[in-house]
Image 1 (cartoon, helix red, strand yellow):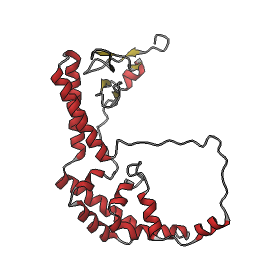
Image 2 (cartoon, one colour):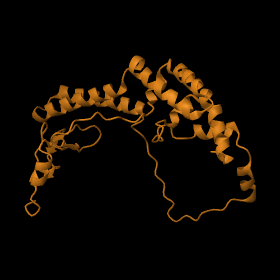
Image 3 (cartoon, one colour):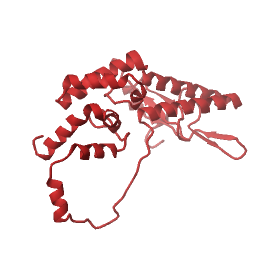
Image 4 (cartoon, helix red, strand yellow):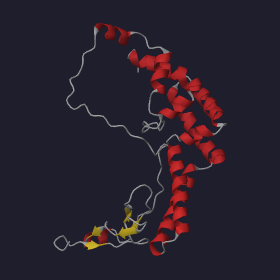
Length: 256
């Protein structure tokens, strides 16, 4: 620190970045994580501050450094569209998808754009903004955790547990909590396709093959550039299936 001219920024808000429950139900808390800056940084970003955020799934709390250059206006971020799995639980959303998709069909790009537009409107007017719910839960968890740093109270612990369960439920509906499978080849020799397999692959693709492949996909894997996860195509296959099959056929024919 001395040789690089660094100084500890300090933090605002909470005190500790690491918590661990030990034998006897006692909590051990330490400030293990810190942010450092030098004099040049202070001159360039005079409004810089560091805060410790809430713990939601790990024993470490993240720390966030916010630095806005002097005189720079704060700009609202434009978040990309991401299809929310929670929408599929609402009985009216199927009709929203059906009407939006038909308005752009058979052009899948136009249909997806229409679904994005109508889904966002549905979210704000009917479903209730899931992002607001998530943010409110995180704020409440943070409030309880800050209180627990100065007072180990059983009712606060129970409230923290309840809020965490509610947050997990919201994250699961959004598709943020996933079971990720990892696989490694580890030098396994690659196999060659037989003539029969090559012939099978060159035959026209049936709509049932496409449907079966879609249904076998992980519902909540990271979405593509359009923001739609596989859960969308699974839930609304009766609406989107034929158009999806047609675009796959064109892809196999080299037309797209």
